[in-house]
Amino acid sequence: MAKKAWPSFVTKDLGNSDADAAEMERRWLIYRDEMSALIAAGGVHQDDDGWWVCDATGELIGPDPEIERPLNLREAGAAVSFDQAFPGLAAKMRPPRGAQKKPTKVSTTIRLSPDVLAHFRASGEGWQSRIDAALKEWIAAH
Image: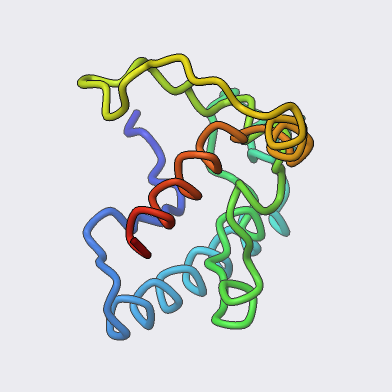
């Protein structure tokens, strides 16, 4: 017995052009109509992941058409990046910054007035870089 040809929604040959977007929409409409007819005819059920399964054979037929629906321009324009949607998780996933390949600064010890040191330390993380910037600014002015 020949294997039944189930509806399919193939898009791997499509690119990002307007013509390809129109072709994707056309293919999805066909897939939606074919799957809707198959579902209406019965003999299939939907599993927990949204895929339709043949009752007689247990064969996976395909995902629910709404799962496969391409985004329209309004939906695509409203999409946000992973970093925007989940900033905390995105920050945890970023690899930690490694050591510099070649140090760009020289480590040294200098004596500063307590009030100067307190001022820069109070400005938070990166206070040493701000001292460096202030000294560069002074050099440029003189």
